[in-house]
Amino acid sequence: GKRESGALPSSFLSSTFVRNNRGDPMDFLKGAASAAKERVNTAMEAKKLLEEGGSPVEAYISAKANLRSTVQCDAVAEAQMQDAIAQYTLALQEVEKALPQVTTDEKAELEALVPAYRARVQALRSALTAVQVPPPPVPAISPVEDDAIKLLYVKGKVDDAKTRSQKIADDAMASFNAKKQQHSSTAA
Picture 1 (cartoon, rainbow, N blue to C red):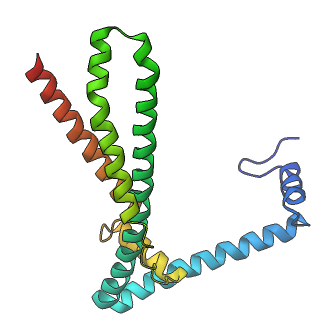
Picture 2: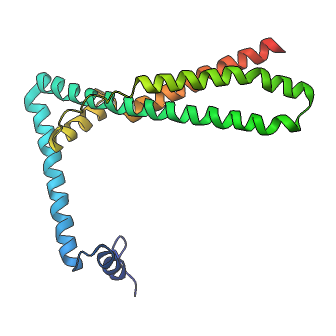
Picture 3: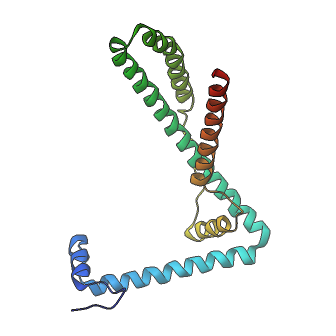
């Protein structure tokens, strides 16, 4: 038969519970309702924390958010360095494969670039070795504080690591493309 809009079919509910070993679908729904209520209560506590605590609590929560974001940024930077090393290494392998197949002029052009690429791989490996010291710990952040951080983020009072990292990556690509465009116009 036809089901109401937004309602989940009982076959979905049953298969979900069997797959997740959660038993009776009604128990799951009761648990979900309880979790939703708890989630709302946490969000309300976060709002109350910021409202009642004023600027001192906001500064404290913001500081914890920025400490966490900094350590997250550190992890992203390390991963990006590892990826850059892998990309440079792959590019050098591609050059080695191409050399026997290209003209003498093309071979000279590619071979002229190889030392700079190898030097960059070495520099990145050295930098990566230097940052192998474990990052500082992330401060303990309770669920209420985490929600308070989210509220501050929505208000534009803190940044998250992902947004900041994406902006930096976008800015770096724009700068690279501008330099590439400038180089292309001067070479022409």
